[in-house]
Amino acid sequence: MVSLLGRVPLFEGCTKLDLSRVASLSEERIYQEGQVIVKAGDPGKAFYVITNGKAKVVAGSTPGGKKEAELGRGEFFGESRCWTATRGAGPSSPRRRSRP
Image (cartoon, rainbow, N blue to C red; front, side, top):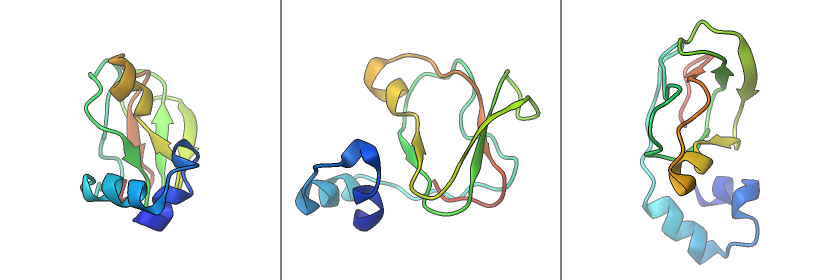
């Protein structure tokens, strides 16, 4: 986990000790394909780093909306919702079994 976090641009410049601390606060979750991780309007509760698989971000309030982006290993989402207390733009769901 530490080496993966070190490749996330948000954590550039962090020491291995800092990354170890972040990793120790992390919780691995496995999502099934099509399962919604977050929805538009949800309050920010978590920051997600994709460690395996892919996730898509869609427009609208349902997982079947228009695909806006696809995120893969080492990419992240949810950071602005955590630190600014804003609500997210759209739902994210895995395109295949993923571990954010």
